[in-house]
Image (cartoon, rainbow over all chains, first blue to last red; front, side, top):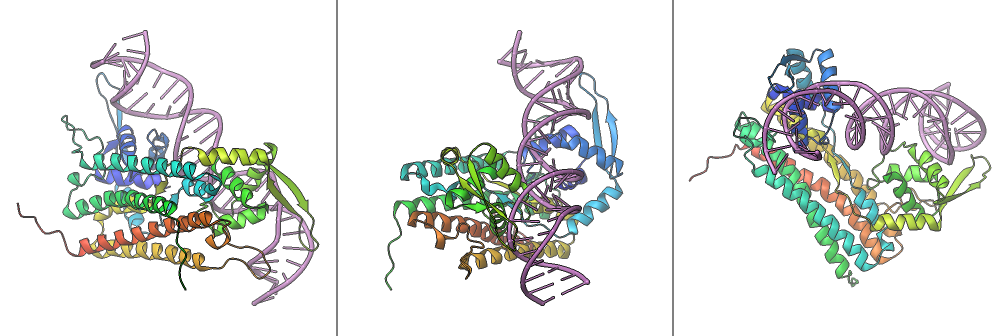
Length: 197
Length: 197
DNA sequence: CCCATCATGTAAGGCGTTACATGATTAC
DNA sequence: GTAATCATGTAACGCCTTACATGATGGG
């Protein structure tokens, strides 16, 4: 369901092949789908059947033919309705918190070890994000790589603002997580003193 | 996979029926599974087959019989291994960000309207969380309702700290989200001034 | 020689949700 | 009378991931 709107959104931006979309999904965190997501081919077929997109075949020499998809007016309407519809709350699944819940069974050292591992994991994700955010994503041949949602490629100042705030949302999420681990480790080092009454 | 460990964790805390576990999943945000999750019955069957849990049947008058599950030593070992294993990064799926990405097609009013809806949605979730956090979750009959991961019911000071920090993780996530929307709305009201160089 | 890239797709499996089924009791 | 609670479970569906299949070109 959501993936179809994500694709429609991309196509409202510019015409793309399935392969292009796949690469963009892989290179973006905002689009949360996994790198090698072959769902998009079936999703595109569905969108085509519903007449929300049209497809033209671009034959290339030396390389396989590409199927280039464009959004139709009907598709634009459908997208517009979705954009105006009730936003859903984010869904966050953090299995680490379940791990932590029973971590009192671990020794002080073991507990700190997994906290450090978690911190490093988050730090890594944050770094990757920040590197991507700084990339000027237009390759010399004019192709885009991680162009999706890059503020430098936005069409209006407002769109640039939205896109940079989307990046910031991700960055602040990881930063919030880092602050939280730091605080937790501190508290574990210095157990809470008893309060006077 | 993850659900089995979540159940093992709960059973390492105390013996429970499938129905109990179901209610706890429904009443907790840390355990991210949905309210009417019947997966747990099949998961319990799997755990039983693997001999990670034992089951005893408690016959009741007036009410259907309950199957009470307890963790075995083998189950404890399995849980211990998982607790010490590499934590995974949280996975966050925020379809609202995809909505926002193409929201430049909306009017100023329409855009602000969905931002307000999103803010309210988050605020609601936060409130529910905070209310739950304040509940003293032991009902007069001695049964627990949302007892899972309630710091008041922790067995050691360290466990209480962990559990309260798990709650804080959720609260800070929503608060971070609220700050972000506030900032975005402000920026949309007062478009960015050009910088001097 | 092997691997990566380009480009499309199918098939199978895993995980989670929703709906359905049963059946008694209690509350509005 | 209808709904909710207690308590278990099955079946179907949806979404996503992984693996597999094809087949050419170009680089290390």
